[in-house]
Length: 228
Image 1 (cartoon, rainbow, N blue to C red):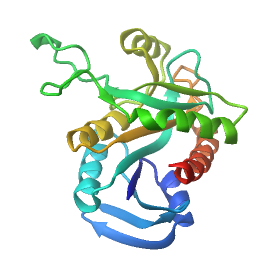
Image 2 (image 1 turned 90 degrees about the vertical axis):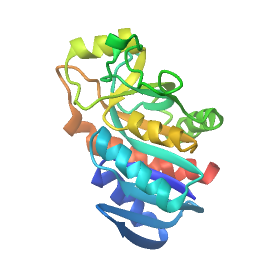
Image 3 (image 1 turned 45 degrees about the vertical axis):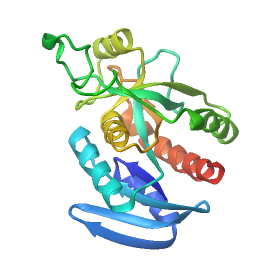
Image 4 (image 1 turned 30 degrees about the horizontal axis):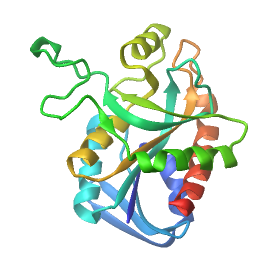
């Protein structure tokens, strides 16, 4: 069983419609959809926006379905100057940039009690993701890099520069590292996939490119699942 978590209704709804043998399971606030997608057994769910929503949903999915893998799909703002709109960022690792316990000598972004700074994605799947995206989106680039997560929508040049300089981030968003943290604590391999919808600057064009980025997310996931 592969767990797929999205933050937004639009991206999850597209995948749910394509599921065969679909079954809806309601648990608390979550609507899980079990079925077969691209020949794989999957469970899909919308987590909602933000770290708390993402973490709670991830634990609920793991407790109920015991997935072999967790994939987090969605869109993000570019941080690295090499990353542009509609490019794909595949998580090498993920961390929470708004965790600050430096007063107790922890590195910025490190959660006390965790073994290291950030959470490592399943390295076995990273190159496969690059290969798939190069085939279906040859006009755009793929990057394996760091995904940074915080409870804010980044739209200023100053914050973008800070995240690049401090964390060497490829992109920023609002759920990935929380999902990665819970997956890691439960020993479930994960990968975060983020298509870029804006460049996290003062000319943020999130709404303009959101629909196209979601379309790319859906097409990528369908092909990636076929290869896993």
